Amino acid sequence: MTTVTRTQAELTNARARIVGEREGVLADAIVWTVRTSAVVGHAVARVARRVSGVVTPLGWAMALLTVLALVAGYVFGWVEAVVLGWAALALLIIASGYLAGRLAYNVRLSLPANRVVVGDRAPGGVAVRNPLRRRLPGVRVEVPVGHGLAEFAAPSLGAGEEHADVFVVPTQRRGIVPIGPVRTVRADPIGLLRREVVWAESLDLFVHPRIIAIPSMSTGFVRDLEGAPTRDLTSSDIAFHALREYQPGDERRYIHWKSTAKTGSYMVRQFEETRRSHLLVALSLSEADYATDEEFEIAVSVAGSLGVRAMLDARTVSVVASAETPEFAKRMVFSSRRLRTVNRGSLLDDLSGVERATAALRLPELAQVAAEDAAGISIAFLVCGSTSTPAQLRAAASHFPLGVDVVAIVCDENAVPSLRRVADLSVLTIGYLEDLQRSLAKRLAT
Image (cartoon, rainbow, N blue to C red; front, side, top):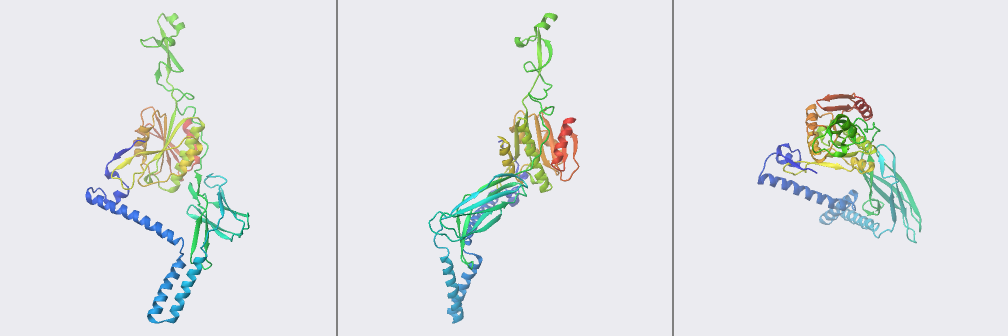
C-alpha cells in the first residue's frame, strides 16, 4: 500500500474540525483533551452498561424510593414512609434471590448459510438443551441481530430435553450483520433485576451486494494473450506481424530462410506485442462522490459485478477502495485499501463491509494511488457517484500511463444510461445496475 501525506488544508477528519489549520502546543493540547475525554467516556459507558445489565430502570427507581422513604420516615417520624421503605428493600432482596445460582444449559447458535445476497431470506436457529439429570426451569433467550434483538422463551426442560427456535435476519441492506452472542436472561417477576449469561459465540452474516452478469471482457476489450494483440512491435512474441531486414542483435532463430533465399539478404520475423491483462477496479468511498445512499449501493454492486466477471474470464484483477485518514492525523494520508480477489466469495465478503466516509480519498486521489500500486494495468474502471465532475474524472484518468484503457462508471440514480468520450476517457453513466450490462455491451460494439 502506497502512503502519501498532503497538506493540512486538505484534511476533513476530526482534528481539522476541532483545531482547523492551527499548529503548536495549544492545538495538540486541545486534541489530547478531546481524545482523552472520548476514552474516558467510553470507559464510563462500558461500566454503566454492565451495571444497567443487572439493575433495570424500575430497579433503580425502587432503590431510590427505598433510600428516600427510609430517610424521610426516620427523620420526620413518618411511620408510613418507614414501612414503605422496608417493603421496597424487601422486594429488592427477594428479587436478588431469583438471580442466585447458575443454570447449566447447552446453547447452540447456527446459521444454515452465512452468506446471502441482499434481499434474500436468512434464517438462523438457536437450540437450548438440558445436559443435567434434573429439570431446569424455563428461561428467556435473547439473540442480538445487528442493531436489533430476537428473543423467545424456552420452556422448562427435563433431563436431556432440547428446545429449538428459528429467527429471521433482516437483509434489506448490504453489510456484515453480527449475530449473537446468545444469552439467557433471568429476572424476577416484577422486573427489578435481571441477570444475563452469555452462552454461544457470535457469528457474522455476510449480506453480499447484488451483482449481475455482464459481457465477457475477453475479446477486443483488453489486450492479452487470449484477446487482441497491441500495436506495439517487438522482435520476440507469438503474434506474427511482418518481415524486416536483419539488424545486429536480432536472434537467429527468427530468421525467415525462404524469404532470405529470395531477397539475398537476411530477413527476420517481426511480432506484435501481446500482454497479460491486468484489470483494475477502483471504488471511491468518499461521501463527497455520492449524492445518495442508493448511488453508493449501485457503485458497490458495479465493482462486484466487474470483479466477478474478471475472475470468470481468468483475468488478473485488482479491486481497490479509498482508505480513510485517521481522525486525529495532522496530515492527509493518501492510501488505498486492496480488497481480496482470491475468489468470488472473498471479494463479495469485503464489499459487504465497505462504507462511505467523509475523510476517505476522493476519486482523483484514489486513482493516483491505485496507478502507483498496480503494475501492468491494461484497463482501469473508476467507479463513483453523480457528484464527480468531468474535470475530476479527467484528473483521475490522467494518472494512468498511455496505453491504459480508462473507463469511468458514474452511478447516477434514475439517470438515463449514456456513453460519452472525454478526451481518452470513456464515461458510462448508469441509473440502475441493469444498465451496466447494456452500457458495456454498447461500448464493446463501438
